[in-house]
Image 1 (cartoon, rainbow, N blue to C red):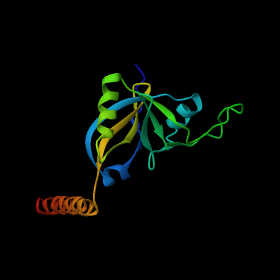
Image 2 (cartoon, helix red, strand yellow; image 1 turned 180 degrees about the horizontal axis):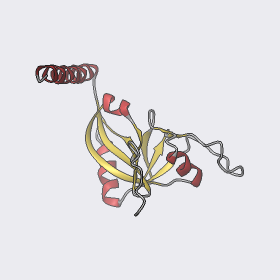
Image 3 (cartoon, rainbow, N blue to C red; image 1 turned 60 degrees about the horizontal axis):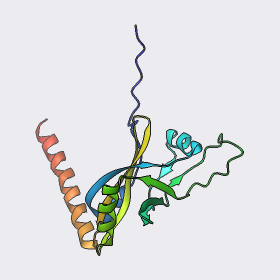
Length: 160
C-alpha cells in the first residue's frame, strides 16, 4: 500500500492582507513570483509572514515589495544577517508590469499585495491594482456584510 499524505488545513495560503480588502476596492489582480533567500523560504514554511502595512513600488521598470515582514527563525543560519522587512523583488512579465505601472500613474490608484501563497513548490504573491475607499464606502461594505450574515442566520434557523 502507498502512503497517503495527511491533508494540512489551509496549507496553500501563507499570509493574507485583510486590511487591504477593507481599505480598497480591488480593480484587477495579478500573480507575481517573489525573489527570496533561503532563510525566508524556511520562515514562510513555518507561516511567519505579515502583509499588513506592505505595498508595491515601481522603480526602473521593475516591481518591489516594501514592508512585508517575514520573521526569521531562531534556527536560521548564523552567518546570515536576517532583515525581516527588506525590499523583495516581484517577478512579473513585461505586459503585466506595463498594466500595473500605467494603472498606478492614474489618480487614485495604487498597488498592494493581497496574499502570499504556495503554488506547487514556489512562493507567489497576489498583488492587486486598487482604488481607495472613502469612509462611507467602508460603512456600506460593513452593512452589507452584516446583512448577509443575518440572512444566513435566518435561513439556517428556518430550515430546522
